[in-house]
Length: 376
Image (cartoon, rainbow, N blue to C red; front, side, top):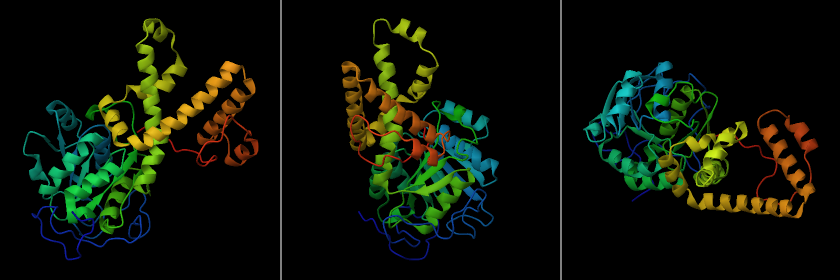
């Protein structure tokens, strides 16, 4: 197994992606795409390279997992005129039929059919399955994709996906670009897809030192054409951040609803729940399968986030039990101000001037950083 790719001219189509890799790599921890960042409407690669054509159009995009994320990406690229043909791959014929009827994909294959024949001439393969399925899927794709095919994912965790890709692609790992579009709703499947899902949202790329510049630029441009802002992060930092601001909130929402639902008087409790409960628990309607996989894939960082949150709950429990209203008010005021600053209701300058001091105990990490909105 190797993480670097030998230099050399691009091979002709038909050789497996697991063979000789092509294109230059970038030194350092996280590579930067060649040239300036490409905004919405930027070409998908410019001159004919790696199977793409001039004018910013992908000839063939293969979407493995035509759900909310994969389907919305396809719809956005089609709306932009940025792809000629989209091939959908998935588990169930009914979902694929829905995708075809909505114009998300032009052709579709279930996993039980000969879908791998579509890979040899694909410009980009987007794997948008639950994270627990990405590893085996990459192993299959590596055996059938062409040498110029760029493979990327949409998983919410990155260290596990990078390790799986390195094992699957070997010396061709340079043409895999780890990615995470930060968008979503509590709905799933092709029926939930819509073309503006990524507009003005962030997509994170976590390329490695050996990742092809050309592959990074192509994937960056693809998400830019979907309307997203594209940034890069180290995979470890990505998983730490999203354990706190995405994975932890989902676990908390699931836990609260599950705990209340298990009570003998659950029906009475839910009958009195109103907008506050609805807002807090909206994401508990998300896919249990997807969030099971995310929690397990990012278990170390998520366990640390849970420990920090449990410490805050313990502090609040002690304040409530002892009647310490001052501590409660300080924590609530800090949280309220941080929430309003994050949502743009309070300018950062005023927020720093009005920031309340004190609190039950110091927390690790930056105190003034405003999190970004995420749904997955």
